[in-house]
Image (cartoon, rainbow, N blue to C red; front, side):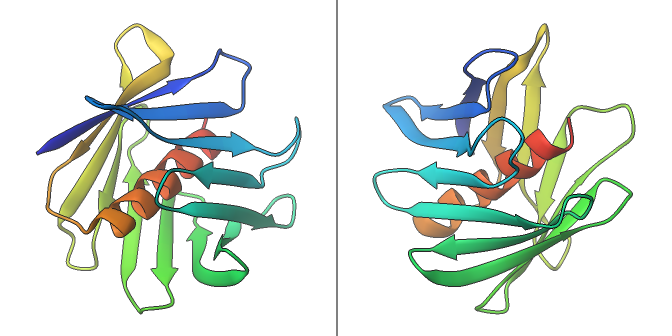
Length: 151
């Protein structure tokens, strides 16, 4: 099992940094104070999350100029991401619990996103199963994006 650490720049910041034991893995930055569009950048991948509408949580995920996935959220704290490859992932949490799980189509937990015990501005991401590097970065970025929206 691999472990990543995420940190919000400060409580009002819309910028998150993800680190492993070797340093920075990537950064998620929201565009503007009121925008829910965001960029995730790392050495290996740059993604753009574009939210449709104001009240909706339908999000298009772009890599370069191409759409590589769509995410839809329900009112029950669950988001489903479908990639153009057909793979589907579900990001879910429970009421009154700050942790969120990311599962594959079969319901297997792939990742767990948690907040620190005494801080809402930092936490960890436990990667429970082996996933290719690019898919792992995509899922880390997507999970952190929806974790922010759920706050």
